[in-house]
Length: 355
Image 1 (cartoon, one colour):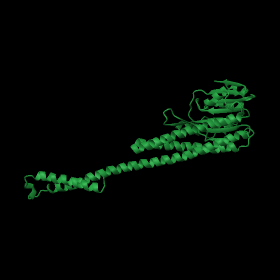
Image 2 (cartoon, rainbow, N blue to C red; image 1 turned 90 degrees about the horizontal axis):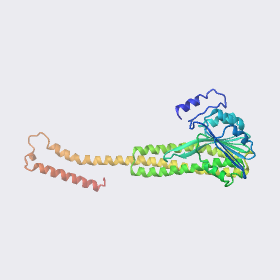
Image 3 (tube, rainbow, N blue to C red; image 1 turned 60 degrees about the vertical axis):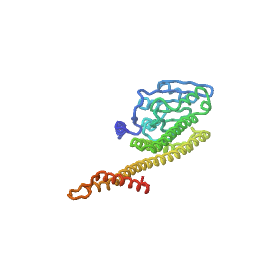
């Protein structure tokens, strides 16, 4: 969270509940509205809509999906809230991009808030975006921070009238939006698993400080994802247990499948955290082993030179009478003794398997 974001949070202190203040990074210059109105036999798609276009579609006899890209526009969010009869506290949470995933029942409106995860184009970073989804009697409204999402396959299926999207009621489409976001968590999880396996190989090859930074980065990412999936699991559980006329029993069976997916994701996340912890321990072990090898080499070199230094020290003393000093080939005998000592000690070290 940046200082600017913190400043915006602090600016809400003392304001009445439901006061609309955008908290987070502004990711779009101008909010964009798109509308899909559909049934089994009818389909209408509107892009770059105005707020005035929303009201008539909210009361349509067909199912309507209204998607809003950009949650920074206070006036726009407030106007949509009036037209869709949304609670002020709900609108406040839509504009706060740091709200934890949650499910809320507002009577004739159900609200689901969650994070949409993705992998950066470089494949090294995990990007997240908050998505707020509202379910009404015959409409679904989704709020996103920016353009570009995971819902294009759903749009294509609506256009081509494939599957059950145009046959089922609005609660089924509401479920499909949530399910699409949760399913993409598996792709993110696979990306992290691949990166983790790659890090393990790199650590075995060469444990560098840059690798340690990458390991720490992956560890923080796993912690971040866990902070998202834990409350999301609770939200889906509340969604499944909710006794609301807006949710059919048939849709509840699908919601239970989303809950099972989240349990699988959490188990996978636990395994990944254990694996990254093992890799970090492996890194420290490799660094320690390398240090031991260096120390062993330096110790062997020092040990070899100790007797040589001893011999050189004896013949470097300032006594006037040292018998060997007058030997004609004393210099060569000295080097012969040094070479013999070196080979003798190397032989001894190899016999002891010290290297």
